[in-house]
Length: 199
Image (cartoon, rainbow, N blue to C red; front, side, top):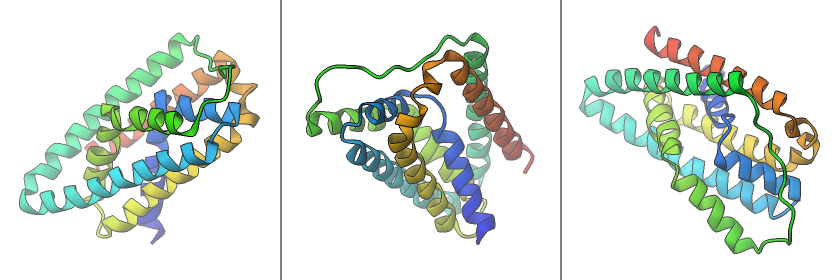
C-alpha cells in the first residue's frame, strides 16, 4: 500500500512546493490571517478534482493507446527538466522575497474568486496534475491509491502553508530562504525526470 500511496504523496508535494502565484497567495492570506480555511480548502479541492481527472482520464486513454503512456512519460520528463532548470535559475539569481500586504480585510467572495482564478487559469496546474500525475499513475497497478496520495499531499500542504504562514513570516522575508527552496525544488524535479526516463 505504501509503495503506491507514498510516491503519489511525495511527487504531488514536490510539485506543489514550487513557488508560484497560488502558493504566494495562500501564504499571504495566512500571514494576514484572512479566510485561511476557505482559501486552503478551495486549493485542495481544486487539486483533488484535477488529480482525479488525470488519474482516471489517463488510465482510460492509456488502455486504448499503449503508445500514449510512453509519449507522456517523455513529455513529462522534458517538462520536469525545464521546471527544474527554471527553479535552479531562480535559486542562482536570488533576490526574491515575499511580504504580506497591508490594508483592509477583503470579503470572502472576492478572495475565493481570486484563488480560483489563480488555480484554474494557470496552465501549469494542468501539466502538473492532469498530465504529469496522470501519466505517472499509469505505472502503478492501483492508480486510485496513487491519486489518493497525491490528493492527501495537496490538502496537507495548503493547510500547513496557510496556518503555518505566521511562523514562516520572518524566514521567507529573506531572499536567501527562497534560494534554498528553489534549489531543493530543482534537484527534486531533475531526480523525478531521471526516474521517468530510466524507470
